[in-house]
Image (cartoon, rainbow, N blue to C red; front, side):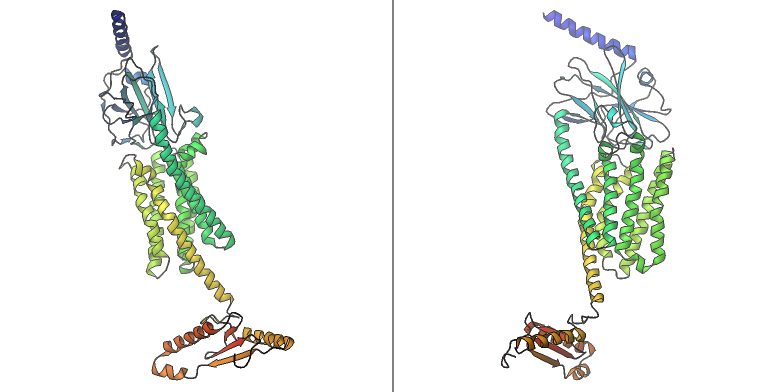
Length: 505
């Protein structure tokens, strides 16, 4: 029986070598080691990479071409694929028990198309594709980003080829995961994303309630900016493609490019409203409105333009220019004494820092990482409560100001007491009640007799302060049913509701 088992192993090895020679394939540069206890492994330099300048070669052409100059893969490698090139990655899956499934994870939600090839036992190549240009129902594993099932064998290694097509650059680190790791990792990611989007929904609901009840235009702009920023993050993380428009590949491909335009436009309009730019400079405010309106024709142009790099340059230029202009206006308003602009700058600083990572990734300066994908979510989670608090404080100040303006005909604006007209109305009603119910009430007049002396010895500010102190003293000794009023600049009146005796007065 031992000779029979050895013969089977030898035959399997000869068959595998024969398939390699027939297909022209060769084992990759390094061998991976799938450990069930580890459950997660990065490709790093265990694979080979090559860029097809034509972007038209098939897997048979690549696998059978011995003249291709492969180079070692790396997690920090960045490849420019903006002229129709295709990136090929070759790696060898080691002998692995098939008790648990293994996957190749490409943590790049915005990649156009990735295709994984493996040669079957009959010599034919089996392919599976995923990406923005592929409908979600055609993915082998519907997810936020491409996850490709691997073919493992307990007897022989299996060579896999990965073809990557992207309109700009590709720099995502490839990693291998099994079922248990994928489930546990996704639970943590789902929790973090749930907290973030739950915070956004709560902020939008509070802003909508403020816009309806308080009739404040700032709340409306803040609600729209939160919605567009959340949609931007949903497209960047792949949630929008997974749950919203995954079956529309054409829109799924351009959504990460057009949705941020509306997010930036709505956010800058909110900033302009918060610092009262309309009242400070109508020309600057009109310019901000025109710049925000430009996001719509730019979005249409991006959708109809086939040149991906041109679209990327337009997006980066618009976002960077509009953001710099918006923050400059906030700084300009702060230099002119706006009380909310410094807090607005404080709340925007995390987002300004977090935006550097995805912008650097889009420019090809850094590869895909946690901070390029989720850095903006962390920054926005810090920004949302700060901006909401600033908006609430601004709304309270404005309501108090409006109440004072509306109450000028009844309230003294300096002391907050009722004026002479309201005092006269209440005096008439007090006299009528006292006569009808046959009880005594009282009216007390208080004059400040030495106000001119105070003004001469000290200054006018001391005289005004004395008036406010007298008003506070009268309010402190008056009962809830009594009325305290300012009748003139130096005279106050108190209505004492009866029944009262003379000694009580």
